[in-house]
Image (cartoon, rainbow, N blue to C red; front, side, top):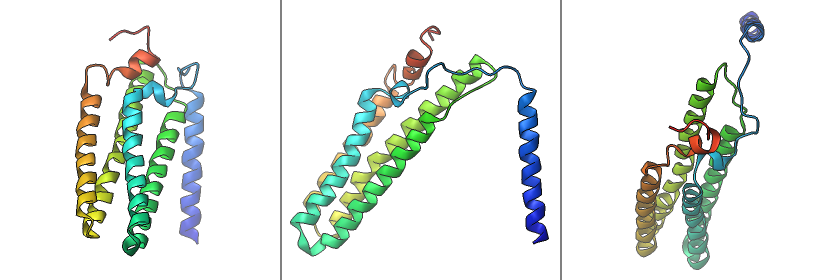
Length: 183
């Protein structure tokens, strides 16, 4: 009990120190309007990542309907894919909606770069969902469907990599959020 009170007191002291330190900081820089997902990623990257997730969920549901023997297993995989996709989307939304503020414009631009990279990686994680459904389908004896989904996964990963590494993909956030600073 005493240890827990000591930890709670230390946490409160740390928060009070943080609040006091913030009062002495320089003026903060921030965007006038809140950045949106489209400011960090191009439409093609967003649609491809979400399309791959949708393919995985729909494929699992279609296989569950057409294969009554494996219905429970495939419905569980579809639910797991849907839950994973929802968690990724909520995390992306939280990253994008956080109100960035910094002591100078360079720090704010750096924060935008980190956010763009984090959002790209998070949405790119949905590309693995067709692979998961493909493996489960293959294990359930549905080799043609499983193979097709693994091929969709491979093509999706290649397409996302090409989109993410093309000339202006990494500079998309700079064009959208920092139009005056051409780099």
